[in-house]
Length: 268
Length: 268
Image (tube, rainbow over all chains, first blue to last red; front, side, top):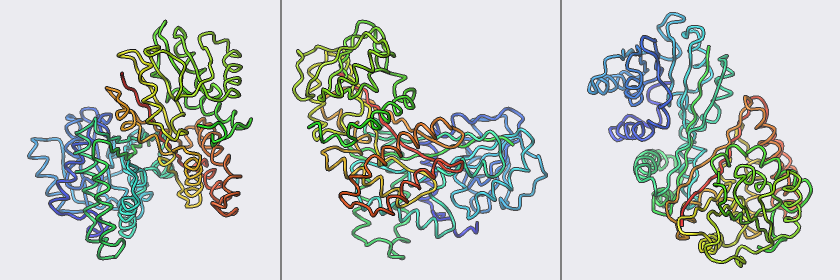
């Protein structure tokens, strides 16, 4: 993936959003990923390190190698990880399709919010497989914007989310990839593929998620593509504004918001 | 709800579908509903008894009263329950808005796949509340057709599901009610409202759900409204056929199907 096709961009606000997202979703997505002390783990596509921190804290004895194609992201990831006093992560700049590792170098591979941005996610999974030892595990986590539904319903909000999907597609990615993890991972030759959906369900009895997910993660992510939507005239300005307002409306006391992430595990 | 507005009709095939659905979903929806021996339970809207059997088996010591507006459905429910040798259920014909019970008659009220068919679900919940003793519980389970997504994507399949939603709306119901349980139950004056989503996730590693849910429950339900869709010209015949074929396509080895039910619990 060329660096400049990363749809969400690399702004400061985007960095904060990724941090917010990781914090809110930590329990739901990561609680069941713990690697044994001494095991060698490859995090393929660490970005600015939002998941790296969680990964390293949950598996403090594991030896984690985190790669990313963007040197700028890697620098921020390293700062974040150092700032947390984490010592078990090594960073390295690398392309997921040309990885500088010997076969069977890792016990475990971890891929989170990466495949959605790749034009050839199946190829990426195939390239990663030889790096695993026999019996080693693969863990993949992805969202799926098409899993979004909410109350009250609103057609402009739906359209705004579709714009996000279209823009990600233009950039060579796939914002509907979560639902496809089972065929993707099984098709790439892994065994014992198991997919578990992780739904974020938000109503006003869960104020942390109302703020942390509905507003600061999901709606902020949609708002983040406003300029591209306007430039490409994907929606009229007033429709867009109504759609964003309708997404915030789902965070009111009688509103509900649902989004599903998917977590796949498999063995070589 | 007038009996003839029940969208799914009362055919033999429909009876089988409801039985299939209850059997496949039993664990997911009902495993955490167990009423103590001696407690008085009202099942409001038992239909043909698909859930009644599960309810009674999971709480063999509870004293269950199951009501429905349709005498024909009640007869079938009674036959089914008797056929299973279940002794703790009493059936009674009644309208949920004119229930023949004294206030505080029940420790628990159970409502499953009923609100979706009512023009005034909030009113129904308000009418039920006085029948509970103080501290008694309400349990509500509903689906949400708008929660459906699948791989491969298909616009005709989406449109076919929208037709189901439109027909249910014409009949005075709401096929998107699952997501609204929190505001509905809280708005009807109940306390301690808790909603948990129950997603049915189906890929080919789960062959029981491929048959039991994707094909025999969901797609069969969509197929069940074919005549109404044709009569009202909601879709062209060939589009409809393509949509149904696309739903069956999601049951192939590389397909995925997702649907979410919602379970609300609350106290008086």
